[in-house]
Length: 130
Image 1 (cartoon, one colour):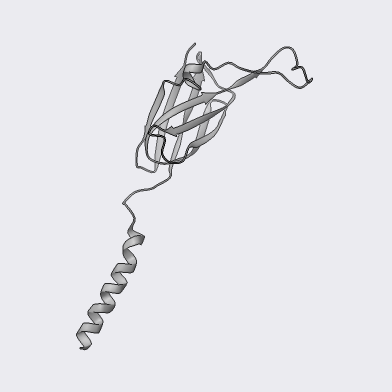
Image 2 (cartoon, helix red, strand yellow):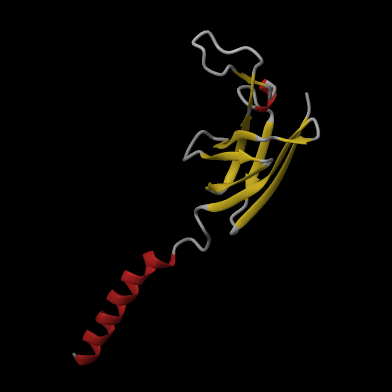
């Protein structure tokens, strides 16, 4: 009888530990890299890693001096990159007139893709042209 209680206790402890083991890899991965447009670093902008299947969270972060770093989940992604420059003339409300200069093929009609691998860090380079 004593042996049965010890066995039962061991099974309960092992059962409670299984969820702590996880699936063997990180679920949020650091993605970092560089973005250039026409050979120049994108000074300020935004980059999004959107799940290709439309399921799950979007990873996103700022681009500063051509560099970005944020966390994303593993898997295939569509990549959208946006950036604006201040126009010469102010907007009708008198505020700065921000004009997007990254072509739509890199944002609203993106052709960019990336695969976030299930490892601690992934590095990407996006060299954009007109």
